[in-house]
Length: 112
Length: 123
Image 1: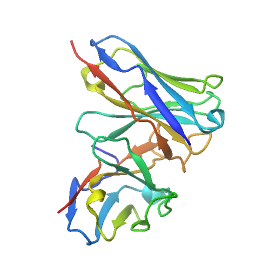
Image 2: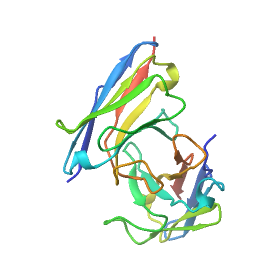
Image 3: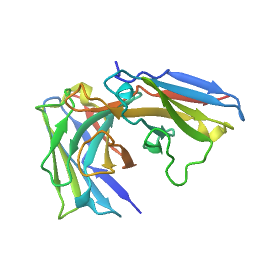
Image 4: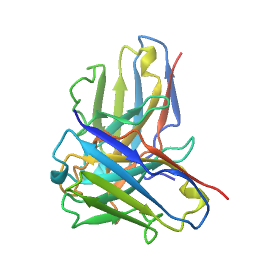
């Protein structure tokens, strides 16, 4: 059971917009801590996609965007492309845990 | 460019030990905290351990506390994970990942990842 909750799967057709939610608590997202997102293409290592809740590293298309409200965060992908098919993970900081680093369980995005 | 290369994985019997290594290049290794993150087959990411830039601060997930040790040699740009008393549930790809800062803090995240090394615990 992950501290951050994500839907196991989402899907969308090419060109569509999809969102992936990441729900936490008052000890992590709700406490104001940043949320970060990682993309893991099949058979590869995770890659940083969004940092500081809404910032994109150099090279990440602006089709990817992040936001946060209350105890939840979201990753939005617009203009869906086949190469976006991957697993997506959110990550944050949790003040209630001795180790602090928490991940969501991951969401599999399928491009129909 | 930043590169992280893990090694040391393999097949090991339950109860045995392994030492994983992560060799870094392309950035000032001694200025950054480093993490180990693992991923069991078909499962999600699980944070394992963190070590501060100078090795003075270490944190572990409850699932590995007391069995795993993290260390670093800044003169060799290398991060280590000593994994002891291995269990079947430790079977996973182990990734090293670079933190953007020196310490584990509220804005910590992983800006670069290695390709991972597979540890399989089986009799």
